[in-house]
Length: 461
Image (cartoon, rainbow, N blue to C red; front, side, top):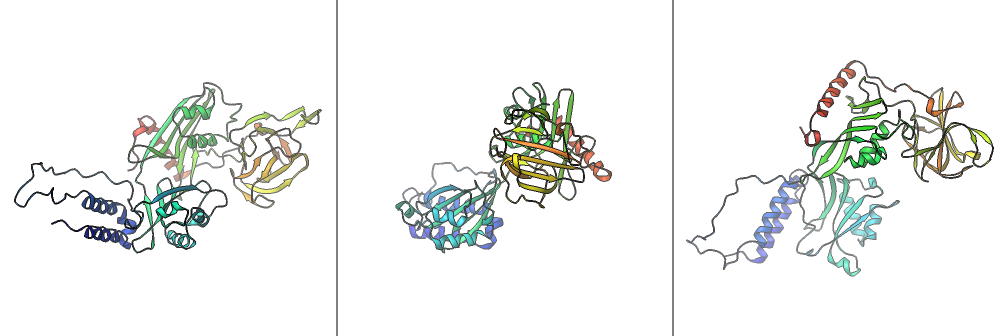
């Protein structure tokens, strides 16, 4: 005789309570949860009725097949968003974090009561720090159906995508308490590769060849110490890049990772870089002789800009007479980030006459760099502050004596302005000893991979 309906729900309740035991929450939850939930669902909703069951002593005519093949691995944990007896029609709502948002403010904005907002955030802190929320992050809420009537709906759970392979969240247990959990996606690490010739622009042609946009941005930055992307790049120049990528269980690209190898040919010159990771975990890029791509100063301290005016005498566009132009102008949209050309200490940050909003950095006893006409100076940038190469120090604007948005960039050598395009710097780091020997082995391994079909090369082992 089949079990009464209320006994079936009791079984489901007991199974769900088991999932919330501490020993299951983090390590066994993803796999066991799926098995128990699917089993309970099958028992509750797919079991045969009394009329469909065969009488004792008789067999059905349908053949029974035994599944001897192991099921595929479960890529994600499976959960129920609260008690099925009280949340039969949950509402899923998603919102994006905007500047100045806190998780508490988001929950209240979505109709969650103050009490439940406080309790859910307290539980979430076991697996996630709410203070790490960033602009653009997505928060997904599961609410009871009462929320659709304009009243405060019961919060059943929430999820935050902390990274491309990890989700943190809380769910309301059958006892009415919020329980924290984590979902770590099972991803395969593989290699991606893109190469081609430049027809329109390096960035656009890289994207057309299948290279992710983020990889192309990093590719360009790797060569920004040696290449003037406005004058050195010509049609027909070639590029090649090998990079890590992360693939999910259905073969979709989830995220791209580090560049392992990059090559750029301009005219008759080919520049090649290999990634090398030191024993302390830091990584850098070196040419085939073990010299770092990093130089004392960046040649171009701004991404995606064009040179609108070079170094030398010119007719001033505002004053109308010939005047020495003691730097290089980069035309770019207002608000484009400006980066420190090298490590150093801020010597001046503020208004400077015709230069407008201005920053000057002292890099060593010989070199300084200056940045002018900013729309605004980055937060925290003031005299005496130490900055690192590539750090954002301000944003493109048209302050001071300027005809339009651009960055005026100067290099000063022993206090005297010099042509940024003619300054040559030695590599910031040269490998030697054990590091050089290990680098050569790493370089040989990467070179061997370049000879293979690396698009499907699995690196998980």
